[in-house]
Image 1: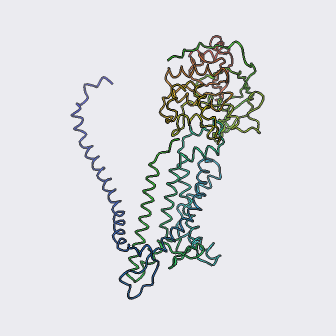
Image 2 (image 1 turned 90 degrees about the vertical axis):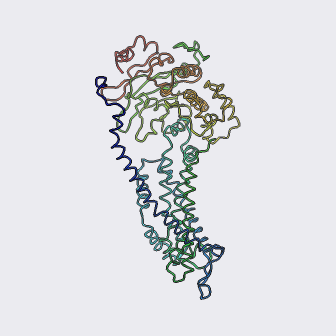
Length: 299
Length: 273
C-alpha cells in the first residue's frame, strides 16, 4: 500500500533491528556446524586408528602368504599372511554379486515400470523388510537350509546369505533411479509406437545406468564387511582354496577371530584385514561418487 | 521469416480421398469409474486439420489421447466405444496399441526431445528403438527434418545435442521425430502453448503444409489458432454431470460465424471459458 510509505523505517534503521535475528542465526549455524564435526569425529578416529594399526601389519608376506601356525620363534616377528582371506572374500562376494545383480536389477525395473500392481506392492514391502533384517538372522537361515542339509560348511552358502542382503539394496536403488526418468520421455517413446520392453531397455535403463551401478557398488561394499552371516556358513579356513563348495576364509572373519587370539602377530593381522576392508569400502564409495557425477553419455 | 502466414481455411480443390480418416463411434474415455467425456461420435476427414476447442478441464486432451490409445497408459484409465482408422477399430482387442501409435503419431504440449540424444538421434529415435539398423536412416532423418521445415536450420549440427535448439525448433524436431515413423494421422496436444507467437506461426504454416498428405487433429486453447489453421472444429464443454461433452462439430468457418448451439456462441464470443 502506498499510504504507509512515509511511516516505513529507513533501510539503516531496519538493518539495525535485524542485529538480534542475525545473532540468533549465526548461533544456530554454529550449532549445526558443531554437530557435523561431532558426527565426523568418530569416523575420522576409526579410519585413522585402523590405518595406523593396520599399516604395521602390511608387508609382502601379508598379501602373498596364507596362515602359518604361530611358533615360539615367529611369535614376535612375521608369520604368514591373509592371502587366503582376500581371495576368499572376493570369491564369496563375487558369487553373491553374480546372483544378486540380475535379481535386484530386474526386480527394480519391475517395480519402477509396473508400480501399481499388487505384485509390486508385495515385492516393495518384502524388500523393505529385508533391508532391515539383521544379517545374523539371514546367516542362520542359510545355515539351517543349506549348511545343515548339505552337512557341509561352504563358501556358496555364505554367498547365498550375502545375496539375500544385497538384493534389496540393488532393487530399491534401481527402482528409485528409474523412477526419475521423466514421464514426458516415456510418453514420447510410447507415442512413437515403440514396444515397452525396447523402450525400457534402450531408454530407461541407459538413463538410470549410473544409479544402478551405484546400487551395485553400495551392495558390494555392504557385503564385503558382513561378518555374522559368514560365521555360520563359510566357517573359515586356514588354507588358500578356490573350492566354493567347501569352507573358506574371509577378511571380516580374520578381523574377528584373530582379535581374540593371544598372539600379537595375529592381532596385528586382524588390524591389517580391517584396513583392507576399510580401503575397499572407501574405494567403493569413491567409485559411487564418480559414477553418479558422470552424466548420461550422449549419442 | 520467409514463410508467409497461410490464409485460413484454404481447402485444396481436388481432394485425394474424401472418406473420413478417423471415425469415432461412441468413444468414451474414463478415469476409473469417472466418465471423462460423454460418448463421442464424429468423423475426422482425411488430409484435413480438425481442431478441438473448449474451456480447460473439459477433456480435450483426454479425448485426443484416446485416439492413439495413449490415454490407457495412465493407471486406471480406459475407454469404451470405437475409433475406426479407415476400416479398422483401433480398440479391437486383437489390435496392438503400439501398432496404432505407429500409424497415429503424437506431438505434445511441451517439446520433449530426449536429453542426451543428438538432433539426428532424436529424429531417428523411433527407428533406433525399434531395433532396426536401417541403411537409409540418414535419408529418413533428412527427409523428416525437411518436412518439418527444420533441416536448413540444423543441417550443420545434426550431431549436436537436441537441447541446444530453441523451444520452437525443439517442437519442430518433435514433429520430425513423429514424421520419421511415417504416420497417417498426427495428433497435436496444444503444440504451441509453450511457444512464442513467431514460433507458433511457423508451426501453423507447417501444419498446413503437412495436411497435404497427413490428417491432423489439434487440441488448442487458442481460438484464433483454430480459426487460422483448421478445416473442421469440434467444440467441447463441461456437461452438467461434470463430464466433457461434444457440443458441436462443423466446418471451422461455420462454427466461428454461425454456430448452431448457444454454448458454442458464448464460448466463441468470449462470454464463457
